Length: 111
Length: 113
Image (cartoon, rainbow over all chains, first blue to last red; front, side, top):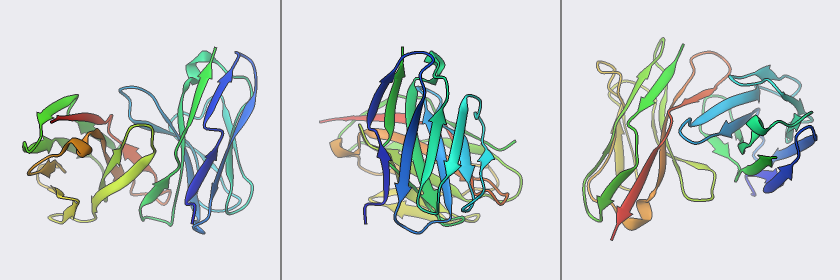
């Protein structure tokens, strides 16, 4: 099992560009999450999906959209990137209230 | 709302020293509590967890006890190794149906030989 995979690993964007971060899990988990990690602030939840076909806002959703394409995949889209969105992005999945499994992260820089 | 507070780092120790990283929480109800570890350049991995008061989670020599009376979940290890150098995150699981994790800000541990 690959667990949780994320692409790309690194990305540099110019202000105003758009991009989609991809996430997939092969553990048949119902719930999936997108977090951003910034220095000194821990991880903050952007969006989550409690089950296929549903998505909900987390703590910091502004500037992002998500799609739960199917049970395996949960993508995060930046429509018009801003320097404030420079961060490391982590995807995670879980089966209800059990352990969350994290992907290796995407390091995004917006110039 | 629910929140987690961790001691600020970095924490620098010599090999074989005793480690404590403090974590306190604010939550309604009785959340599950977790410690995650992040090694350089990697994602987070679950280190240990406790789901009810007085439970002790343990793994790889690390321990933490769920203390409801002090709303704490401090991480301890009796003898740290250089390989324990990482960032440690305390987290709680929200009590609603979303199963969201709420993280502390993380504590960087550096163990010197």
